[in-house]
Length: 98
Image (cartoon, rainbow, N blue to C red; front, top):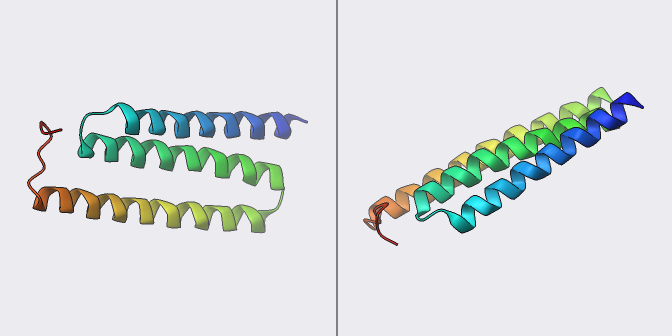
């Protein structure tokens, strides 16, 4: 019973971080701050959701698979954010241009 409530709390917190990242994407003024909001909030949100799912599953094997998925998504998110930022710099997009 306690693990169900803990898992639910972690899932709600993860959803909040996904929502905050989406708000940052829509509200921040330039590509660099938008990338920062998305990569940080989404990685943290996914971590909380994966932790909640791992607790809910009750299996070490499933928890390990979820951890590997989370690590791969963090690696992919960082790589894509780097590529987008590098392309923005190549096109001379500065933070004060909209």
